[in-house]
Image (cartoon, rainbow, N blue to C red):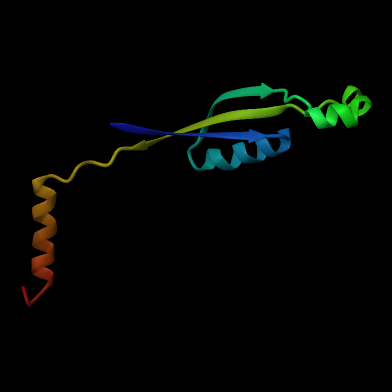
Length: 95
């Protein structure tokens, strides 16, 4: 049985994404999905700096989904419980 962890991050710069992807791949994370989103310019920005918005629109954002698999922990059975109890009893002389 395998547990899957998922993490979603938003990047405003491609360099930061590349750096994080390298670091996270060392920890077992892999890129599952990437989406580029173009955010709207805010109303105040449009009203005050309309000429600026026309020349330089907001930078696109990169939304990345990472995933990694972790082995599930096995439930403690009676054998494991008895083994732990025995080691505890033998280690404690006052038991």
